Amino acid sequence: MIRLALPIYVELLTAVVAVSVIDLLWVSGLGDAAIAAVTVATTTEYFAYGLILAPVTGVTVLVGRRDGKAPIAPLIRSGWRLWLVGSAAIAIPGLLLREPLAELLTADAASATLTADFFLISMAGLPIYFAQSLADGVVKGLGNTKVPMRNALICNALVIVLDPVFIYGLGMGVRGAALATVLARAATLAVSLRTLSRLTPRDGDGREGVGEIVRTGLPMSGDFLARALVGLLLIEIVARYGVAAQAGYGIGMKIMLAGVMVFYALRQAAMIRTARSEDTGSPLRTGLAAGALVALALNVVAEPAAALFTDDPAAAVSFLRWMTLYLVPFGGLIAAGGVAQASGRGSRLLAATLAGFAVQLPLAYLLSSWLGVTGVWLAMAAGTTLSLAVAPVRSAGARANAPCPAPRSTRTAADPPSGR
Image (tube, rainbow, N blue to C red; front, top):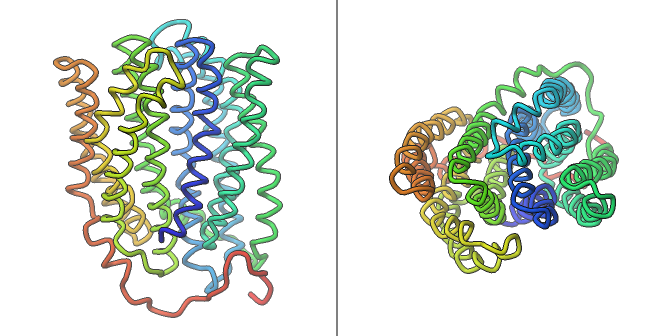
């Protein structure tokens, strides 16, 4: 499972760098308002991604279950139909509501204006982002995690080149960061679709019910949306302490994401292997150990990493120090959640997540009124610990390792699809 997770980690880490950290590094020269704008805009984009995650996850799990057993081409076609409808339903309202949304989520008028500028381009580019996610999801369902890693590396390299050109060379500022990212994603998608046509078979006619795809992926989408929504609410709470506090939170969160992607890589690996009736080991123990290692690493790099973004890294460093209490239970919860999702217990996992947030948000308001912004960090740790305590993850390994009901095909995603 770890071997499967390693390419996923590189893919996720690279995608995060391309979408947020590189943008944040380049716009940091434009001041705190620009940093806050990119932080808000990319957090909102994660929320939008959660809306399309149901078909993406549903296709990944169902392709894994049916690969070598039943035709998957109708399933993939249904996934693209869901992409088309979902992209229009998300991107169009996002464009129309970009200005009030920016005002709601930022601390001052300058940040709101820059955020709306970023939204104008990033919202229009969301269908490209969603299409890439779906294409990668199909390939992951086939058991191939190296192709999505390659795609993310291509996108990352393009953003590294394009960001300074558009932000400073063409004088576009924050809008340049958004445009560079959208163009990089478009070029990557062109490469990805050619690969997808080669790896996937045309093995059946008819229409696959979209309902099954949505039902399979809905718990994962709900979990992601809940986390993204809470992230937006936390931005609003932190904004009460000023732009510097919000910028520090944004910087700290981007740095922490490099470690958190370890947990999500393990989660996807566990989900893929469970769907394909393959051994997962103990994702819970692996996730808890990963949480401890990530927390240790972030404590070591906190000051030099935060100093890359700002001359006053105190707020970001404090955030990263306190996150030690959050990362260990979070690692266990996320890593083991992949088994729950692929084995039909995703709704119970979602219920555990919501229970944690039901405690976290009121606690964040209460503790922040007493301890300041530190109270928000303590509330995050308390809510995640509660979610882990009630989540259906402690028996994940045993269930995943149950004997398979029938032998599966040994064909890999790289093999030719002939003879299906």
